Image 1 (spheres, rainbow, N blue to C red):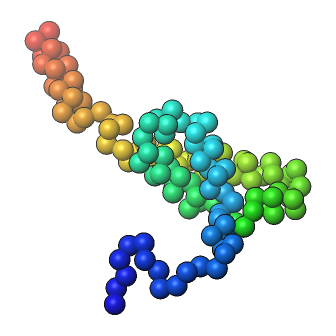
Image 2: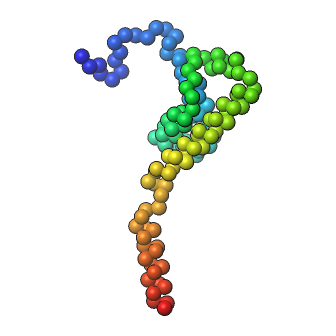
Image 3: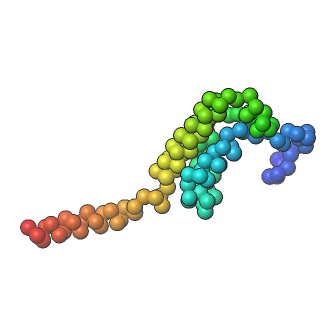
Length: 123
């Protein structure tokens, strides 16, 4: 029997639901600081977050303090640098594939043909 969305065959033990990827919060925070568009466009935010997280190593933990307690200042700086780069690259990637970011081809073609027409009449 197939389960409907949201159904589980069993309930998770208490405490397991606190498991998360350490980078998720860092990536969302960086996107929020970097991109104004992400504040208004949830799909854009989600696309950037997914692309960035797929370029970072998974770091699953139960509590953020578990991760930060054992990291040196150098480790924390390295993680921050990786997050900044992953978000920057993800924004560039998503923008490069977003049709609303590119000029419509008809406008570009009209500009070129109008320039050709005016140079032909000038000659």
